[in-house]
Length: 475
Image 1 (cartoon, one colour):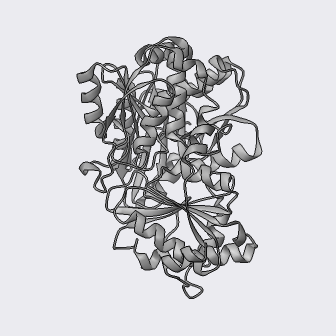
Image 2 (spheres, rainbow, N blue to C red):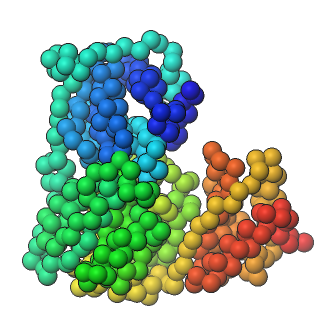
């Protein structure tokens, strides 16, 4: 079966492309790469999530690396991805492998590849390693033999990971009125880590879906509104202050307020930016991906912080974090990273900072969102996926690049093409068309002042795509 690498590694359906044989093949290529670079002696950290056979895949990967003489730090229990990333830097390893398919359906699994800086590896590193796949015979060794030779060492980095996070959170939180938080791990790897972190800062925690379940209870482990019905119900049933959720591997955050209203990733990212510049006074630029809310720009302008916009994908944010002084970076899908902690998405750490914001301001989550709107303006945002035949996709994109005078009754001020085609309107809203790299789809994103305007923009975009007609052009 063909092994196709994405930006951070490789994913596939279990027993189809994601097999033990293919996992061994990938790890042999990684072994060859580390040996060629002279970094093998630094070792590799391996972690795994709650998916079907993730622990088995982790062992198989460890056995291949060990057979090539590469020391392996195998984390001793189910682990969220941010802890794996932290462990790579903490242990001084050359790389990290996380067995996870993140928020994908339960019948998928994968391998995320992390670098020594505690974040995603660079794209050229992925390409270099991918070129070695299948080029040499797979070496392997029994798990017991590797343990006796101390080539595989069971390792636990929980304590230093918690210590690292808590050193950035105000100790005064423990003296505040405890917030009652319903914590939804969605049966994923964050599990009790999430609840423990919130308890450490004084929250009263109610656990929801914290036990491991490789089927995720029949719901994709992605903390978006349609998947958080149980969290919404539990928050309103208990009269909790808020509900927080992480995805399958713990690197994204979702939230609902005390009334059960879903708080979008755009709002969470904006709240954290506001908190770090206003309450904490931290310095540095704000980095956001091309599909992320314009609220970020308005907050940053008010507090005189520079903004850098990058293509879609956290790897681009991570690259900026390693080159420049960055305060925070975030993407549309809810991945947020704060480089003072590490250049990596961390849903648990993001939750701690959100709690800190609420406690420092004395606001409820709904009040914090209302305050955000006063600073950054009214906001509505949504995304849809529209099927487009492959043969017609490029032709359609070519026509969309030509600047129309108006679209859906709005004057188009500018067309941007950093990653897709974005129509920026004079009233501050925007519409982005971006092709999927793997499916016959156009992803369409819209932002405006209210939900009615967003729906109108998305409806007009859908009509345009399905008809294949062109919007009115400037003369």
